[in-house]
Structure formats: structure tokens, C-alpha cells
Image (cartoon, rainbow over all chains, first blue to last red; front, side, top):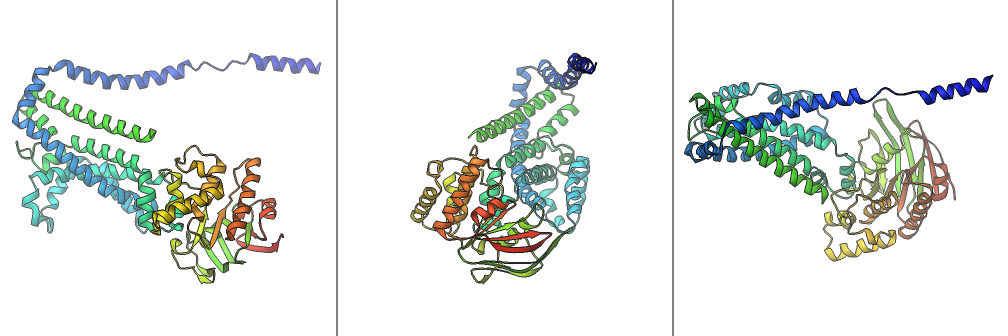
Length: 276
Length: 216
């Protein structure tokens, strides 16, 4: 009898059918697809609502030209500053143990979790106290305020990116470099930083995109004076205040285009380096 | 010569206690023990990559215990080889010589010499991705030997190699040692590996050297 019981069991095993994967896969596609769809539809609606004439019209206005120029310059400066600060902080946080590290880590997250507007208000208040007060006339409500407001937020994101980047590079490389004759600085510049180049690129892209979109802190700390501290988000705000929906949308689309160019360039550049 | 005397260190629950051993100049020594017994830690202390509490570390009669890793004159090959992913093989081998500001001609000569000894001449202009385990090991050895170190520390150099490669690299290590007469400290958990290569074997367990013996 036994063999027949066994063969029944084998048959039963053969007949076993796992439940279909379809509901799970459909769930993934529907949820993911909805979000991706809304993003695409959003931009299609923007494009449908405007026309090339109003975009070109906006581009011809000197205020908008000024705001594009200031946005591009200030974002680039704040990105360079952010990367310059984020690389050493990221490296320090990734490689060294020191007293109060957790506290420093938490402080570095403040600009990420804090409402951006609060950053602007706090900067404004900070420049009431020395030594900041001494240069306040040259900073507050002037172009340096735009850059500083962008930098304060963008840098926090760049720091996160660099920290993760360095965490993913084993310390073993520095160990070997140091036995080969490097001091810490040489090991960093010659062995670690070249490996972190994609992270640096990612941090710079992120910082640039954050800077371009920065609005709240700039409004509070740098004001919204036309032809002086007007960046693209300020232009959107001012056009909206003036009830010029077409102009507002045109400027918004210019920002979309600028962000897209940076993202695509960074990706292409990154890919090329990856394949090299 | 590598001489470690009464080395102690505590790291969390783990301790090294009064670790003492001497590898005479030009000898090939194996430091043997199970995973987690402290042999890699001891090796890292010798290389200067880990701080210790008390004890003395000498290389060729010089007390190197408080020197930076760069100043100890020890070649180091970690278990994962850690080839620099952004550098061509030639540049990896030349790395320590560039740091020491050798002339380009001397560097070129030394790199070619090592490449020939280790059979990696055809790999010199490659990047390290896609190399086999044996090739990586040869390159890591060449890189560690380039600046003519007084001692060579190898952390499980034959681990993760298949049987055929294992024997091939074993012979290579033997040959390199015969040619360079560098003092070698080789960490392994395999008794057969130790027997095959080492003139002296130290057995380590629970953070101590348990016994010392020759195999030759």
C-alpha cells in the first residue's frame, strides 16, 4: 500500500498550483502608473494651457530675463558652495567617530525637515546679531541673501548625498593607500574622491535643483524686488500676484525646461562616465 | 623581521591578550586560527591600521608602534584585495612609487619588473573591473611589493579562490618569497596552506598565541 500512498503524494505535489501573480503585478502597475501618469498629465496640461507666443513674450521681458540670469548664476554659485562644504562634511561623518556625532548628524538634518520659510526667517533674525550684523547691509535683501538662502537648504541635501556616497566606499581603500605611503589627505584625494565622482555629480544636481526651486526663504530673507533679488520662483509669485496667469505659467515652464536640461545633462554625463 | 611583543587591545567584547611572536628576517610565517580569533586584528595592528593599548611592534629592529601606516615599510594585501577601481593596473602598481616621488623611468622599470615576476604584463593597461580572483591577487601583490617593503602582510590571500587557482597562487607566493626574500606574515585558517608555504606557524585562539612551531 505504501508505494501507492507515496505516488498519490507525488501526484498531489504535481497538481499543486501557486496562486496567480496577476493581482500583485496589476496592483504594482496601477499604483505606480497612476503617479507617473499624473506627473506626465500635469506637464501636458501646462503645455496645453500656454502657447509659444506667451512663453516668448515672457522671455522678451527684461524682468524675466534678469530673473533667469540671476537664477542661473545664484543656483550655480550655491551649488558650488554646497558641494564644497558637503564633501568634507560627508567624509567626516562617514569615516570618523567623535563625541557629539549624533547631535551633529541631527543638526545637519534640520534644514531638510524644517519648513524652508523658517530658514528664511531665522537667517533674517541671525543678521541682527554680530558678526553677521556688520555685513547685513550688503547681504539682507540683496543678491548674497538669495545665494545664502539657496545654499542653506541645498547644502543639507548635498551633505546627505555625500554621506551615503562615502558610506558605500569601503574604508579598506584608505587602509591600503596609507600602507602604500599616503597620508589621510593623499588617500582621500587620490583614491577616495575619484570613486565618489558619481556621488559628487548627484549631490551637485540635487543642490542645483533645490536651489532653483527655493522660494520661501528667498522671499523672507532677500525680498522680491524686481530687477534686484527676483529669481524665477519670485517671478512666478509676482506674475500670479499681478493676475497674469499666462506669464506665471510661462515662467514656470522656463523653470521646468532649465531643471530638465540640468537633470538630463547630469544623467548623460553620469552614464558616460559609468560606461567609460 | 617582524617582532610583536605583549600586544594588548580591547574592542567591545573582543580582546587581544599579550600577543607575542617573532618572524625572523626573510622568513615566511603563517598566523593561523579560526575566524574571529583575532588574527586579522593583529595583522591590522602590525600594519598600523588599528590602535592598540600596550605592547611593542618592531619591523627590522625599528619600533614602529607609533608610526603612521605609511612610515612602517609594510606591504599589505587585504582579504578583498581592494584594487582601486578608478586606476589602471599600471597606476595601481606605480602608486606607492609616485607617492615616494620616484622618477618616471625608475617607476616604469619597477612596474615592468613586477609585472613580469607576477605574470600580469598583459593586464597593465586595463582597469581592474572584470579581473579574475587570481589576477586581482597578483596585482594586489605587485602593488604591495612595489616600494620594496621590509615586510609583507597577507590577509587570507588564498581565500575565495577555486582549487586550481589556489595551488597556482600558492606556488606564486612561494616563488615571490624566494625571489624577494621579503619577510612575510600570512594569515590563514587552513592548516594545509600554512604547511605548504610557511617556515614558521603561529596558532592563535581567543586573542592569544597558543603555540608556535616550524613546519620545515
